[in-house]
Length: 277
Image 1: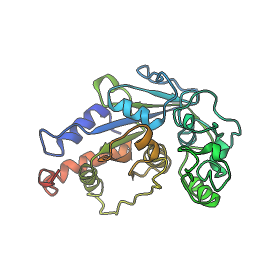
Image 2: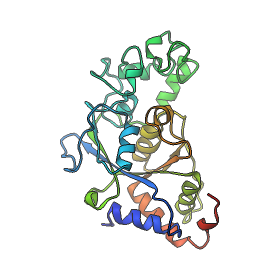
Image 3: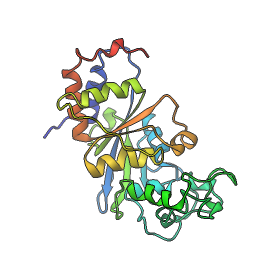
Image 4: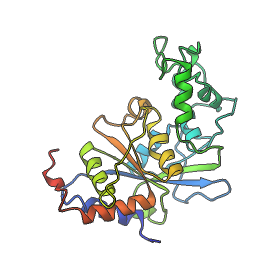
């Protein structure tokens, strides 16, 4: 078992592109804190209940945000990350960055029942994000229920917190459960080329354009042990303001380490410096 730190692995990852002046890639470690465990001492809650995708963005700027049931700003993220039980019938109290855009705060059970993601079809206009003309994320309640049911989630809730952190020396003692890479399509492509180098197995992506950061990039890799990619989601784009030229890759920690090894090994077969920006 490797003892390499996230900081060391990230530096190797950047060097493996073989472009000395390559702009730093957004790499974020994700550490789950199970019930009864102690969070890393560097971690601290943000000053308000922001979305998970916003917390990840703050981590990309050098912060170490801790997200728990009290500070998760998006109910869907709370469910996906194991902080909230999907069957809870009471709304999370207080201001939440995502649901504050709605007329009424939803309960977790409103997501599983399809009342949030298909607010118009469910005759629940109070759950619309963007006013009376917003139909929700799906046309029918059945489509919303299917989408929710097929989302990988950490359930029942078993986490006290989730920590997002940068690959800095100050956090080198934290071993990620999942590594997020938020980068350009060509950088993600090169990473995937390293990922599949040893096996030739096709890399399959599972996404809905909904719950990109919490489900696609964290919960699915954590639950399945397999990497996944995402084009992010409405919350990441419209609320957390992740830029349009970026997409994401989520890899379990050991998969990330293996990918770095394979990017180094395959560097002369995949000339990243020749890929137009």
